[in-house]
Length: 238
Image (tube, rainbow, N blue to C red):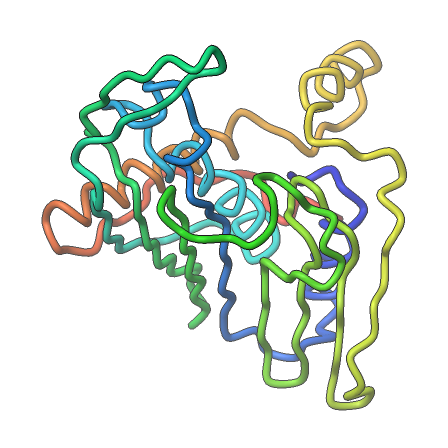
């Protein structure tokens, strides 16, 4: 998620102060998963919408706004038992053990917060994983001098909309994906291992995102904020 030109554009605008003092961000990535996710592993213990979907947004937001200092979260199961149909038309019952519905609040420090809504029980008029709706924004970042929205998904970006106090008319930028596809992560890292180039994808960032997701579930169970202990080299875009 940190290798797209849209990610770089957004990270640079924040770093340059184009939005002024950033207050927070809100993100949505979800769908009505039980209508088309045929594998029971998505719903079993160890699965869930946060690990499957929310991880993209956690990576993007911490990459742009910085590491999390603490989090709070809520998660729920809306359909305890589901009947799924596989590609062959066979039906089988699944006991839902992981979150179908999750809400995560991240404290990035410096008075800056972000909120992620994700789930498998959220109606979406688009086809599953259809990122071609050019006017659909999934990430919004707010500052006291401007607002910036990602058009499409962070794994399938279509552009970035930006409006500032100096130029309040919302305009679209960075519409060229420049060859970026979300499946390229492994080849991207392999190339940098071979060439010695600095990688924007790091194990430390991945570990940080994993700790955030684990902490979200812990917060949901306990009703308390959970401090985050890991960090990573930030800013990513320099």
